[in-house]
Image 1 (cartoon, rainbow, N blue to C red):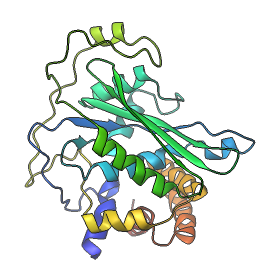
Image 2 (image 1 turned 45 degrees about the horizontal axis):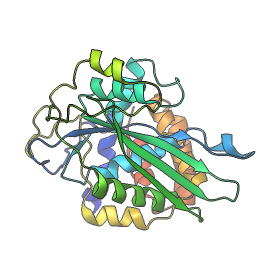
Image 3 (image 1 turned 90 degrees about the horizontal axis):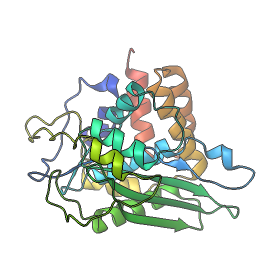
Image 4 (image 1 turned 60 degrees about the vertical axis):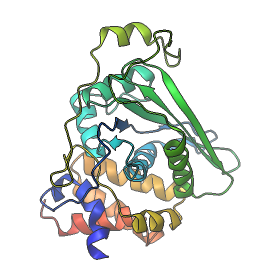
Length: 281
């Protein structure tokens, strides 16, 4: 049990020395990049949730990585590309940015969307995929909750995406009549000029490519789904991730301790906190 719980430690760059365990993806499985979600909240407290999308992104990557139909790019790898392209402070993710980042990651599809806290205290998450070959936006999803359990919302979204997404491998033949959706700007011209996503490297169970997110054992996915995490706590977790991304270990530890105090069974936070407090970095 202890070993399986350390799955999330593999997500932290400082823990790269630890052995990782991943299920082999299906042969030719398309590669999916999940980007941070925008804050679309409304009301006087809307700004309180700025940055929460990084937490939504992290948990969604964990959930979708368990689907053998596709490979999911590791969050730290996405963050690395965003930093290299100076996109970490560029604001909302649009279709053009999604395609640009997706191509740099060698992904066939990018998934992104938004989190919204409404005036009544309810939460909603929207998401869709964008083909990084054609710019076409597909698989629109929206999940709603009157309560304040963001983890349950992410689990619902993951289930919908897993069951409804129909993804072809990069380079698969597409209908010549397909027209890119005009959302987030006209993507047709930009996509025609840009090269197709690079072929993803082969991944084997014996030597998994570190670009891809590790697969959490089913019992741990179930435990994660059963843990209630409200929006404020998820925001703290997202801020901890951001601090870790910016190499601010002290701040990350402080924020993670606040998260664990609020949600003691929230595995991603407890595992990251354990890893950081044991790390000499």
